[in-house]
Image (cartoon, rainbow, N blue to C red; front, side, top):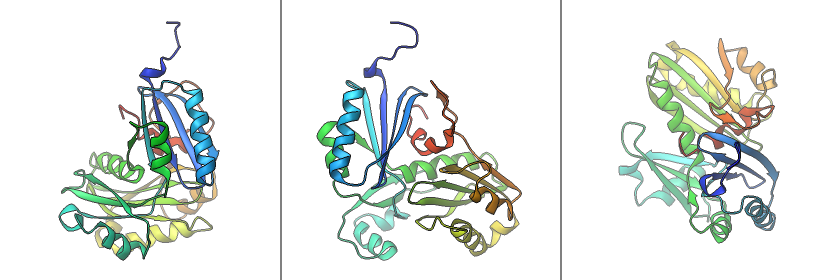
Length: 264
């Protein structure tokens, strides 16, 4: 094989759809070969985009897909099991859409994360890649940050990923997850308002040294960075710790997808 060439059967395709944008990433191990974001606003456009991707990446080894920054509810599994629909209704309001549940032991006891589904998404993906694996972008985001914060349990951390339509925010303290939510309030200081309120509600977090980690659709000197710099001393736009075949101008835009890398 020529140096630098890639066997598609050894590579992975990672995808996330928000309902309006489809972000996809092609990788081999921990090396990102290509990353793109497409405007995809309905199931017809989604089907076309997926077929185009399959044509470009014929024979790709594995496929993972996730809802991009979903609205979600989270509870201990001992409370949530069998009550997923009721919890979704309680936390997110009435909705005829069935929830999708994921499980984790990264937070001290088994927890259930219950996502609001995007109707037809899974059907469209599996019609093209029948063995594709569905994962939770929200859960992977929370798991990766909580494991990182346990390296310094005396500090607190606010982690925020900003998408095209929504942002996922979380507060960590003493090695644990204290609060998390998804918001579509991206204008002005909406994200800052939610975060500051969450910190004030958690009494012991106000005494901790707090850092803010930003990823997604954010820039080093952007409005969100400036807003948080008014209230926090340590604010960082964090780029993914991966290898790039061609380094993009804004690597932080792909941060949630890179958390889905097979070896991440």
